[in-house]
Image (cartoon, rainbow, N blue to C red; front, side):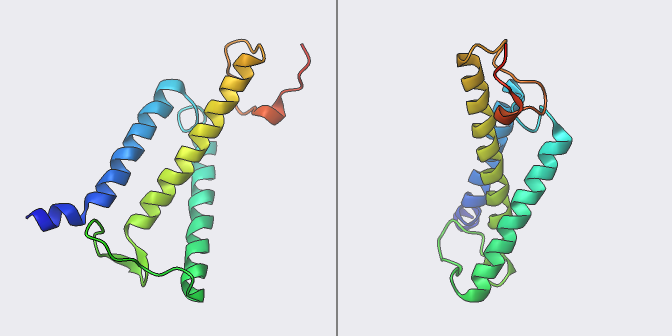
Length: 130
């Protein structure tokens, strides 16, 4: 029984971390909860590109599956574990939450109304004019 629990620990940690990131995102409306359609397109693009990158590196022999007691042992294709798409989702979501959060903080420091730019406007969308 303990072997079953530890073999799924990495995936469980990724899912738990993703859940916490979703809570943070929801609380501050940073990314997925700010503009769901656009965020899901960005997520799909990011995860898709990183999966293609992984597959190219696997084909070239750069990446190989590592062994560990916390991995499930299941592979989607040789050397690409079931945990990888979940990790890539988390990585893309984390990156965008940090980027949009930092943008909001910088906007607030620069004297923005409430630290939030108009939906869809990032740093490049502000002119700096008062």
